[in-house]
Image 1 (tube, rainbow, N blue to C red):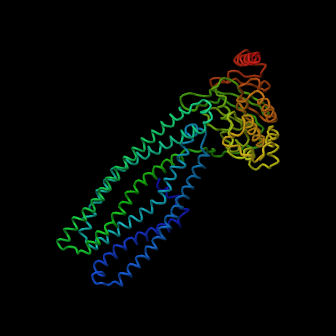
Image 2 (cartoon, helix red, strand yellow):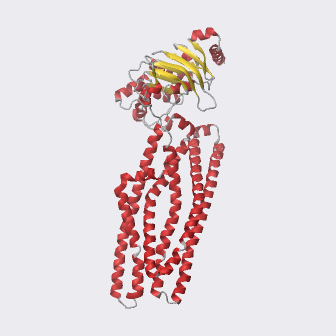
Image 3 (cartoon, one colour):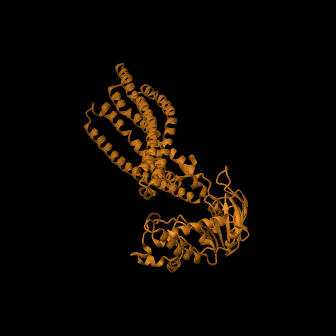
Length: 577
């Protein structure tokens, strides 16, 4: 872990070196004041050498001005270095998140991931800046203070330093509890972020059902967990600070008592004793800095461990020797495919399908039967357990995922649009498309006319998840995106099930045009929309239970026939009302 952390310093070696040099000079300047104090008390003031007193004072002022400038450098450039390291970690994490498989997002909440990218990385950047700086300044100060105090009185110095083992022992004993408490605190913050992200994203549903109290209850549960975790963390921190502060207070008592005895017995002069009392802070201050650094270290290390948990997740990779999928015709085959999201139950069991190129193939059946899972396996969003899936006779396991997904267009029921302009959302289908191609795609999706009624046209911002558009408009925008992509294989996963009948007819017209000349896999809830499919498969309990054309399946009188009869009866009852 340490080597991985150090690697982020490499691009900033110059700034880091200058920062450490400035810190070293600052720590050395700190020793000048007690040296000057001792000289004045023992020599200049008793001998009334006021000229040298002024010179020493002005020299000290000059050094303090230098230290002020160096402190500015340390604070500014040190923090800039920390922020840039944080930015690099954030970029690395984001790039890694983009490469992680669907299964990772099935098991991790968005808010918790965001917490690791914000709060945790901020703690890491603070450690990256202040950690080496504090260690250097404190270490140099401790060594220099020992040498200087020894030059005043070696025995009194050894008595003071004899207290150090007690301080280290307490720090080591309390460190483990403090680390555990801060780790739990980080987890509780992630829970709050996840709850907050979920509640804000679903605020319209909350208002529609008047369930604000329920959301408050859910949030307060996480908030209470956070409070308890922070309470434990602060309790551990309180024990740590109170005990270490007590040991440092003992230093002053030891100096006072032992120094008094030394002064009484004539083993130390009054000027040296006064200088020693002033100078002992040279030792106490860096010790306190190291103590405070322990807390910062725990925060930073905990954050970096959580950062590494994400970075160590296995990304999607292409198998060795994988080739690009090119010149796609669109022939899709499933051969005895078995798949499960976990080891407890198979979602798909022995799926065999043969979808000819350019044909329209429909999947119907009860919810949870495995229809959407079949759609997700074609672009290789998940790895199958056994069997094989082939496109134009090539196993998708031997194809690069990027080339595979470039040749597949997906229109889903749950449309995701980015908080950007209409143009940007359509361009997501093919980023290098021209303005003319964007407009043509919008026309073919039957949304161009609506866009032109807007004041800003294609530059109109649609809000988070397209909140400023209706359901039909969002769906047509997603269809325009696929038109622009122009893939040879098309997957329509219940693309119209959430729309009213009038809107569905308009959307269906666009979808029908989109299907022309492509191999199309349609998941449909309304059987009336797939009557003209070349072939229909009924999926239930992870298996293909029936397969054929609309007419053949009706004549079979099985599950498809029953589904169609129930929908037809429901439609008749609705019309009679």
